[in-house]
Length: 302
Image (cartoon, rainbow, N blue to C red; front, top):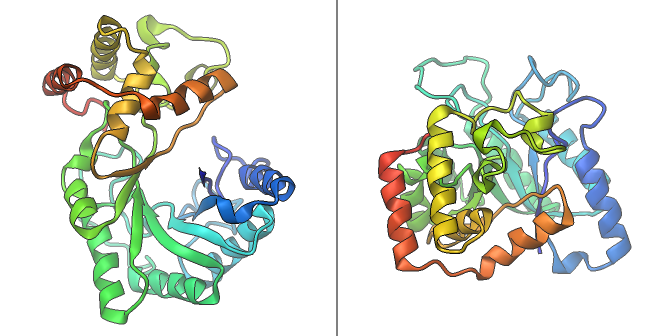
């Protein structure tokens, strides 16, 4: 009953499709009439004047931009509150969306976290937002939000939505312990690495209507090391009579710091298979062999 969206969606981001996903969910919600039984999460964009000029002439994480974003999301979703409102990516310059190597540069124009959190506090107090969370955040960023919440008696973040999969376990370096000790569970996105872990792109295959066939610029999970790792995980799944995608999802589901695994599907068959993975137990043997593959190909697609 957990549905995650964002003002940015659909992906790839385009002016003509911005907000369409929220609108589709809103239309669906309107017909169901059981809003209280669902947990709806959405996200406000971080800065992006260079690649998102169609969103408020370049979104920012200040009061004016965030208020306009929330108002528009509520209207598209046809609801008067959002259960979980998340910062999609940080205002400050740091490494996210697969960027490697930290450059210690400061942007004097960046909106301070304190200002952003103050606005989120106002949203919660107004009743239009129930809980707040982060996405694409670093350990420092998470702890700064928690520190400021304690200092000002503002709402604590309750979740972190970051990438996590067999191909990208970088969350385990720092953030997993924060999730455990601070009760800020991971909402794992890209648990199949854009579908790569299903094995359907192995040997340079280009299945019709598949995401990476349609959008070839999304190459984060298509590295050479990633392909080798994927081949090993697919072979492991088949050796134990498991569906590769279901094994990959079941492994993410089994991690103690994961609150929910965010899945996406192109077809109803894929959706059903993904949902069924929640009931798939993995033996100790399979888990041990997953760790062996990880040691051979550690985080090939961070």
